[in-house]
Image 1: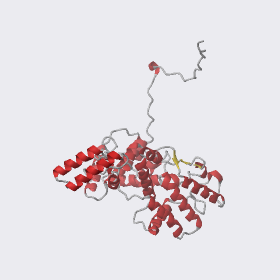
Image 2: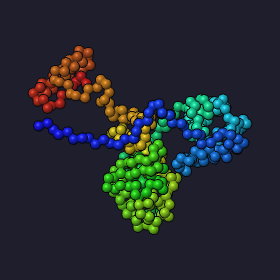
Image 3: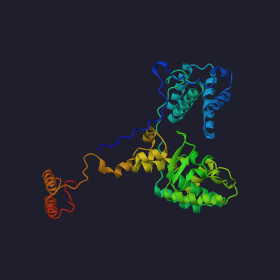
Image 4: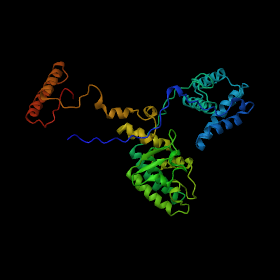
Length: 393
C-alpha cells in the first residue's frame, strides 16, 4: 500500500519585489556639512566632530582619544591657515607625508601614525559620509601596522599573581576579593578590560549554570558571549554572594566589578594593581590588562586557534596578525612537524640499511653498525621493542 501523502504547510513569506518596480536603496545623507565647521578653532571643531560621531555608542575613553587625535590633526592644519571647511585632498596628502617623515626620523612610531590616520578616516566617513578611496577626498592613505611584541604570561605567572593577591596589603577586603575575582575572570575570558570592568556588565549577565558571561560592551560587535572556566564560575558564585551582603546590592542590575562605595572601579586602578601584584610575585614583566588578554588568547591559540578566535571575539584577520604567531620557543618545542623529520620508528630492515650507509660514509664505527644489526634482530623477534636507529642518532 503506497504511503499517504499529506499536504505540506506553506509558510507565509513576504512577497518578492518585481524587478521592473525595484529601486536601489539610497545611502543616508551625511550627518553634518563641512560649511558648519568654518571658522571654528581646532579644539571646538574636534569636539563637534566627536559629538556627531558619538551618536553611536562610544565609551568615554574612545571619545577622549578621538578628541585628542582630531585636535592634534586640526591644530597642524590650522598652522597653515586651513580649517575643516577649506581642507583639500592635497593638504591631507601633505600632512600624511609629514607623518611619514616623523616616522622616518623616529619621532613617532609607525603604529601611532597609523592610528592617527585610522581615527581621522573613520570620523570623515561617519560625519561627512566620505566614500572616497584612500588618498582621495578627505581620506588619507594609511600606514602598515606591525604587531607590538610583548612578553606573554604563562600559567605559572598567573599562579604567582594569585598568590600575590594574598601577600599584598590592600586598603580593605573588598579590593582584595575584587582583584582575585578579576584575575580569574580575565584569564579565562580573555576579554578587554572595557568589556568586563564596565557598568553595563551586571550580575544578571553571568549564567553560572552554563558557565557563560554575556558581554554587552564589545569593540567590534554589538554583544558577545564568553565561556568561563570552572574555577572562574566558582569564584564568581562566591563573589556574587559577597556582593549580596554589601549595602550597594541592586539585584541582577548590580555591576559586576564595583568598589566598596558602589561605583565601578576604574581601569587605572586595575592596571595599577596588576603592576603591584607583578612586583610582589617577582615577575619581571609588564603586566597590564591587555597583556592578560594577549597572553590568554595566545595560550588558547596554541591548542585550538578557532576556539581562541571565537573566545576573543575578533575577526580572523586580526587573530592571524596578533595571536596566531608561533614564537621561536613554540617552533622548537614542536620540531617534529618539520618536513623531513620522521616521527615513526623505522622497520628493522630500514634501520640496518641506514646504519650500513652511514658506516660506508664513515659517520659511525663498526661497533655501532653491529649494535644496529643486533637491535634490528631483537626488534624482529619482539615487534613491541622500540628500534634505536643509528642512522638518526
